[in-house]
Amino acid sequence: MQYTVRAFVEGRDARLDEMCRTFSSMERTAYNLFRDGAKAGAVKAVLRERYRVKNARWCQSAINKASAVMTSQEEGIGFRIEQCREKARNVREKVEHLRDPLKVEGCRRKIARYELRAEELKGQLLERSYPRATFGSSRLLHQISMADGERREELVQEWQEKRSNHVFSVGQANQRGNGNARLSHDDQADAFRLELRNWPGGDFVLPLHVPEHWSCLLRSVIGRAGVVKLGVSGGLLEGGLAYSVRVVRSLKGYQVLVSFELDEPASEWTGRLAGIDINPDGIACTVVSRDGNPIATKFFRDSRLIMASRKKRKWVLENLVDRMLRWCKDTHGCNAVAVEDLRFKGAYDRSPRTNFKLSNFMKRKMLQTVTFTP
Image (cartoon, rainbow, N blue to C red; front, side):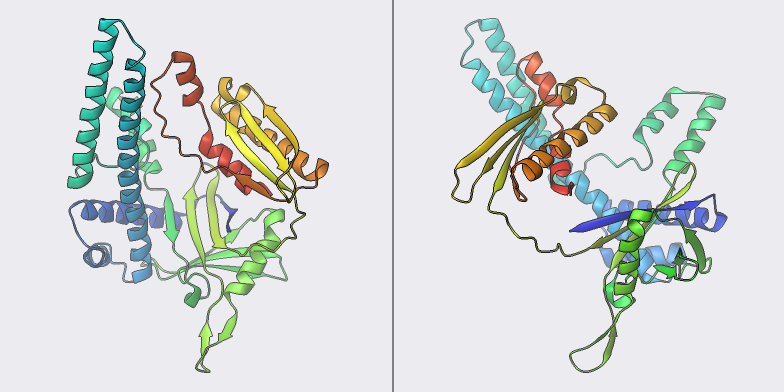
């Protein structure tokens, strides 16, 4: 299972600001080169020459980020093609129940429009001519185009800060966890540090503030990353647990996100299983015994999942999932759950009330909350 620990660096650091600006520029350059059809090897050579970053691992981290943006765009276009096709199918089903010639003609035009849009998107996907990504914030970029004078200058400065605010370093097990962004812990002072290495501006160390409930886990990760293992041939190999580090600038300083993989501890199955079905207005849960006979069923409903604001819906969902899991575990002694693999294309072409419910359906957030809640 993947874990992400959030640590903090207070204040601003000129060296880290310059590092964020350069790395973000490397990421955008790699993205533009990929759009022009360049290969990863050629992109790495351009980055090393243009930015004078001789360390290949920093260039590879920028290439990984740019590749992720390209992959996200391709997946997004594929998803929109499926949406258009699903909407066209929904309208065809609606036409079968219509008798008014005017409504039938309107539905046929709508089907033709969806099919035309799907073909346009398919052509973009094949030719890789889809719109460019907006680094930073598309909302701020839109506001810049509408503003003028001093307000425009303020928005431009904010947008430039937004698009040049992070550094990413991929972890490697053969580099003691991470060769360029290395974590360490001082046992005497009980303090964490982040050492950024192999950068053209020189190496430097930053003090980290780690929340107390994550400090023990992070200490164990640092220890496992620095373990010296004995190789098969008898030689010594430096290795252990690889962790990736992402530094993001915020208003109060910097957030440091440390991501790593840990094996899940084996747990004894009590013989009872909870089946979970997610819905726009709640979560249905059924507990069954080992032989499949139902024991209890309950629907955890809350209309605020549809009606409330976005931030409040997230809070309501987390509390609802917590109640549901406590009901499964404490009331019925169930420590295993099965969640449906929901494939919902978001084709909102039904009645207005149904469209409103589906558009506010937090399907992905529900699945993530159920899956990652301990």
